Amino acid sequence: MRSKLAPIAAIAVATIGLTLAGCSAGGTTGSSGSVTTITFGNWRVEDQALWEENVIPAFEKAHPEIKVTYQPTGTNDYNAAIQSQVDSGTGPDVIMCRPFDVNRAWIDKGYFDDLKSLPGIDGFTPTALGAWTGANNDPYCVPIASVLAGFYYNKTIFTELGLKIPTTMAEFTAVLQAIKDNGKYTPLALGSADGWQLSYNVLDSIGPNYWKGEDGRLGLIDGTKKLTDPDFVAAFQAVSDLKSYMPDGYQSLKYEDQMQLFTLGKAAIMADGSWDVTAATATGLDIGVFAPPVVKAGDQRYLQEMPDQGVGLNAGSKNKDAANTFLSWLASSDFQSIYVDKVPGFFSMGSAPVTYTNALAQEFADLKTDALLTPRLQLDRLSAGTPPLDDDTWAVLQTVFNDGVSAADATAKLQADLDSWYKPAN
Image (cartoon, rainbow, N blue to C red; front, side, top):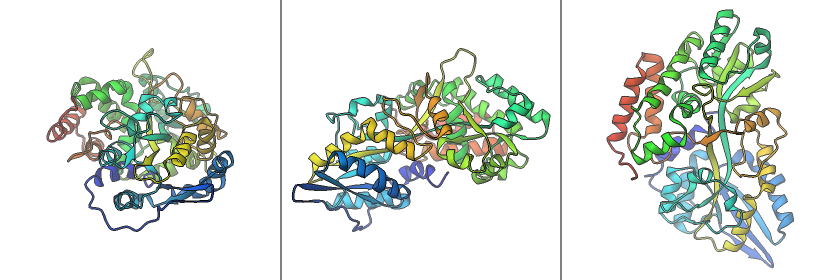
């Protein structure tokens, strides 16, 4: 679902230096009698009914002295709108936070109050909070939801061919080869027409098991690791090796095409994100999901958990007590169990366990058990300059798949481009 997720990364890079447009969007707050009204600015237009019919009524029932007005803006206009509103003093009381670099720029501009003393904020791990911390490592947003990445598989095809879920890369290759040898189905529904898909749903899914999740990602940030290190090169090679199991003409296959190939039962496996839980099951197939395989048996397993939504307190809010009460409720399992269960494929980032009524969403959530979680490699600090590592990775991976560029050459180019502007944090 490129239209809903990938723009978070693309806009994050594009809007850091955005010139603010004059915007008169709503965001005023006030009180009526003993009831305080706060506004909630966000980009989740598609979730308006969910919030207004399920989430906000649950909060207001517990806190009748506070009313919440849901104030969405389309995702493509959201960054500029929020910046204009906050700068003009008309911003909403609580603001949905972009992950990583955009939000860090907003924190530096003084848009948010820190939440280090907020009741409930200690229910999140440092990794969960990391997308929304400032230079002082204090949290500025309550984590609301994340997305995961893995491999969807057609259970009927696996049963027909006598296949077992692979847990190592050797087993994964053997399963793909068995499907290819059978000749009835495409082993892997994957195309290279969309570079973001190769990056987010393949490299950032398989890769953490090679570069050891946060060890590798944070190593790039602090300069102790390079993309030319053996673990990163091996990850790129593992991704490149998937070419022989992809459909004929994969170079022109787009994200939507691979979903169609999979949901029509023509492909056995699809690399994708959890946000497509509903789309993957739309045709009624019996679908499961398995985690990115480890490099060798016995290795620690890593899983991509990408922070998608957080909510912070507008430093200019005139209703901070009520806003903090709302934010503290958002940090609770009461909220998390309502929201993420109503939006299959989005997951709670809190430490308390949450049960999902959607069976495939629960399978995805279960992949987190015993895994060390890590966000996408490119989006934290490494995409704040030019060329951003995020966009650069999309393009370079397409040359690997479409032009035969080697893993060693691909990682060398990415590191050279990163070195051209990025100075390690330490």
